[in-house]
Image (cartoon, rainbow, N blue to C red; front, side):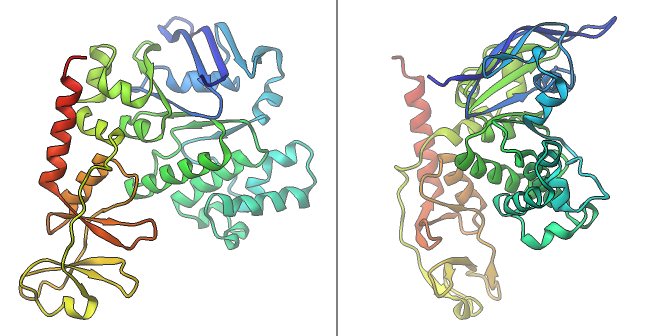
Length: 361
């Protein structure tokens, strides 16, 4: 059983003359895991996050971090002991990227040269080129700014990282990249991360555990993503998760039983000549480039998403549905062709999985 890092004990936040923003919240947040707070606007998820570093003070109840009551610590000192990433990155426009990242170490008394050295190291950690360190925030894309925000939050190597809707202001493609980058970082760093989002898909992708908040600041369900999708605790959670939760659950079904089939392949030069059937175009290293269409003059057609070792049934189905040929492309760990997947076989596996779940124990 995981050790608790953060504990809420009967915590309420009541603003004068209104309903509670957070109502009698009790929960344990696991050390070294990503816990996601999700729910509609006005449900208390951001208020709960901000009570952890005392940006908001609770009306009643107790919050402990690593066993210590946070109300006994100076608020400024507490905040500098935690990383914090917000929606708009919150970078200081008049400071370079390196100096933005170095902010907290400098506040903690680290010499300027050493703080900048640490900042330069973190650029690589979050996947940014070293040359960006000399730029100003306005010279970066939104996704790059968010990566700098994560680097700044990591600069003092805090055990706890608080993330308040950090990816909601970027476009969907960049958002997915940032989500995968966060999961990669977490595999390496094993921080205790509390992440706020209003997007149930983001919650199920990122969370080791997910806390669903209902309007009125009540905790409606707190469980693994798979359990929330399989067995919503009440009508509110079922409605919030949505009717397609069965499809989302496929993210947790391993796809090792999916069969791989051989497929006709051609090189790029052959792709433009027209083919009697769909053929997969490979580069010189056997990596897929796209499909050669059987239609005259079809040329190279983009190939859709790829299926990789260890991926889920949902990824397998995505690969098949996004492919112009109807065949999902599977690659090995080096990105080379491993075979193709057939959509009807994946659907049969999904149906068998559904029947197995519904059988009485």
